[in-house]
Structures are given as structure tokens and as C-alpha cells.
Length: 524
Image (cartoon, rainbow, N blue to C red; front, side):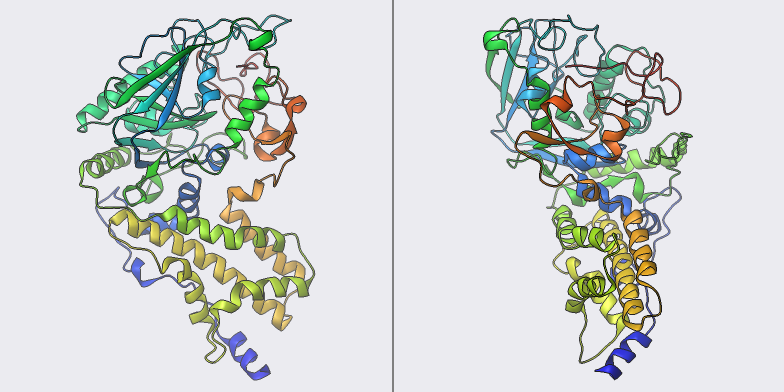
């Protein structure tokens, strides 16, 4: 056994990348390619994992990817506005009741729906009355509409990240800079330019042969729906209670809205959205400059500010081409990523807190022994087996499948190489346990999995609270915690506000989330 162990340790470690990735393609300039996919492998991996999930899309809020999506017939949506008549034209749809309830006030319009009147998310409001039980205008009765899809909506474009967040931090880059080819930040425009943005997107959709709507996320998922009279049945419009007492009393409004948001941290639920991962188009596939120009070193999320126009035009052109091609099924890449994270996420965090050397070795053995054939010891082969394990069941049919496969394999190769390296160090006692922990910590930093910041299980009267546009502090973003209704209060958490910029107001000093020049407190 000692001899076998020596032979295993004496073999060099190697980066095991599946043959599916070879050769690295060198297409026309600005095109999607394996080199870019491998360089951005961790970002692609995380984009797939966080798609249609409030948690990861809030932490990594500057989305860089597009996914064709579909919504089954019979799916319910909600819309709040001041009038009971069925909506016509371009409007917003909410996936959650609480989201739409914020707009169910008699203020002449609504959202998620079409025009977002003063007082809706995305627009600051005057302060409420000192004795108000709810946000300004909350006692003004409007209507909560319910709509049902009367056909399968198979022309939905999902824009990932916090893509409905009206900030100057990059949340709107893929819409304003890439799709609409407009570098304007809509400073001073009503509702952060939402009406103009929605019209522009839907007009683009017509030119592409038809898009039912654009699926985005803020404090909840929503759809900019391009024609309410096509694909939706009006179910009902119920009058909301007036005043702030009796039936309208809701001192837990903020907390319950937070609970509704938290219920979608790990998925939209109910089979309401189906993503075509095999048609994913991402800036991470391309040789793009995605650097963040903000001087704050914490602002490291990707931006399109510095991307060249030819590269942006290539992405848009590729997305249009993919949109028009015949759908032939999709590989469920998020399921693959979920399996990997279920296996490794908690264990990598545990290894990163420097347990005793024997515990660390036991944990790593548990992870790696499945990949080692002790009849024919080969570290190189074991790493390759480890890298490929969760990719074995996958079907690759499109170029996008191949790029995703390559990215996931690159991530797994780094995980497997690191773990085998640490295992070798611990078995041979070449390095200290502390040095081994440093390697794990470096791996975890590179992976940057959003699960690393999960609160765990909160009490029944608490939610894991994270900064979700337009609320939350710097602390809420970088260190989410379980909070009860008292701690959440009326969205007025203590500390520097996380979100910068937004509709109709100045951007404020770089990195400053408070003060007269920064975003004021917001309520719903």
C-alpha cells in the first residue's frame, strides 16, 4: 500500500480538460470562442447557476447573459394599477402578488405594468405621513389585476442579473448599451427611462420576428410584456382596501414582501419559466473588455462601459441569429451545475476554515476516492475522471452547449487539481495544514459561488436579508444575515445604502450610498 501511495504521489498533477474543448477555436474577430469561455469559466458557471434565482442574481447583479425562455399556458401573473379595466399595449407583469400589490394604488397607472407612476419601484417618492402605517400612497385604493397565459409564451427573452434595477452600477448595461445601442443612463428621465426602454425593446422584438416579452428581475421577477391583448386572459381586478387600519392594516408589509422575495432565492418555482440553456448568449463567451471602471475596489462586477462597439454588435447579431433558429431542445445545464455545487459547496467552505490536518484529509478523501482506481494509480487519470464526472450525462448539440461544457470542465478541472494537490501535500507532509488551507481559500475566491454567502436556515419569523434593488445596505450585500420584521423595519436599514444612481437623481460620489447626493431612502 505504501508503494502504491508513493507511485500516486510521484505522478505530476495536470490540468484535465475534456477533449470536447479541443481544438480551441479562433473564429473571426469578436466572435464567441473557447478561449474566452475558459478564461471566464467561473463567471459562466455562476451565470448558469444564478439564472432565474433571486439570490445569486442579487449578489452578482450585473448580468452579462441572455437566455431564450418560455412560459407554460395557464401561468398566473399579477399587475397593480389604479383602474380596473384590462390592460392594453405594453405593460409589466409580476410573478408575485406582493410585487404587484405595491402598484395597486389609485395613482393613475401601475406596474409591474406599463407606466410606472411616481411611487412605484424605480421612482423615489416624498416621505410619507409621520403616522402612516405604510408607504406613501399606500392607503389610496387601487386594483390588483390577475392575468393568465392562454397559450405557451415561447418567445420570452430572459436578461439575467438585477436587470430591472435602475442603477448606474451596470445592472442595465446589457439593455441600454448592448441591445438598445444607447450609452445614456437616462439620468433625469421619468422612472429611470423605463417607458422608453420598454418601447425600444419591444420594437426591437418586432424586428427580430416577434418577442412576447423581456423577463427581468428587481425586488422580484417581472416581464415587460409587449402586447397584453396577445397571449393573456384577464382573470380579475380586485379593489384594494382603503386607509391604513382594519382590512388595510399591514404593519408587516415590508417583512412579508421580503419573505416573498426570499421564497424565490433558489428558483422561481411552479415550473413557471423554462430556460433554453443551449441557446445562451453571454458576453463571457466573447473577447470583451468587461472591466469595471469604478474606483471602489469592491466594485468588481463586470461592465460593458469599456467594451468595443464592434464586439457589442457581434453579440447582438449572434443573439438575433439564435433567436430566429429552430428550437431543437435544450440541455439542462443548470441541473449539472446544481449537482456540482451540492457536492462541493459546503465541503469547500468547511475546508477553507482550516480544520485539523487529519479532518481535512478525511474530507478530501471522501470527495476524491470515487475518482481513484487503486488497481491502476494515476493522478492524471483521476483528475480527468473527476473533471468529467458530472459532464458524462450531458448532450451537446449547439455551439453554445460546447462553450458551456468547456466552461464547466474548466471550473471542475481547477477544483479537482486543487483538491488532489492539497491531498498530495497532506499525505506527503510536504506542506503545513495552513498552507493547504490557503490553496482552498484561493480556489474559493476564484469560484466565488453565491452559496458561500447563504445565511443557512433562518427562524420562522426571519428572512435571510440581502440587498435587492432598490433596498439594502453595503453590509446587506456583502454579509447577508437573518433579520426579523423589526430589523427590516420600513426598508430603512442602518448603514450606507448599497445601490447607486437611479431614475431622476444624481449619482452621488463614487461608492457613496448615502448623503444628499446619493440615493435617498426608498419605501414601498
